[in-house]
Image (cartoon, rainbow, N blue to C red):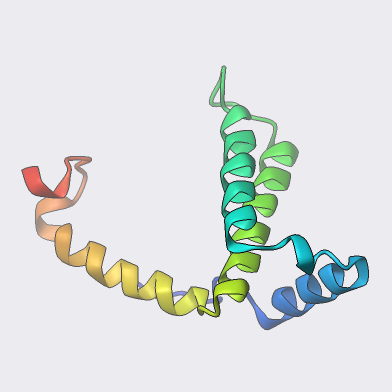
Length: 112
C-alpha cells in the first residue's frame, strides 16, 4: 500500500502552531486536555451518524478536522511524529491481521 501524503503536513503543523500562538492557547494544551478534546470531538463526529448513515458531508468534514487538529496538537505536545507512529502501528496491526486470513472479515485477531 502506498501513501501519497503524510498524515499531517508541515504546512498544517505550522498553521496550527501559528493559530495557537496568536491566541495564546498553548497554556491550555496539556496532554490531558488535548486527549479530552479528541474524545469530545470524536463524539461530535459520531453524532453526525447517530440516526442515519447519510450524514451531512460538511458537518462530517468539520468534525473530522477537529479530531485531526487535536490529534496533531497532542502529537506535537508529546513530541511524537504522527507519520511514524501510524506506520509503526500499521506494522503491528498487520502482523495481528495477516491479509490472507483477515481479508473481507471483521473477526478479531485472536479468533482468526
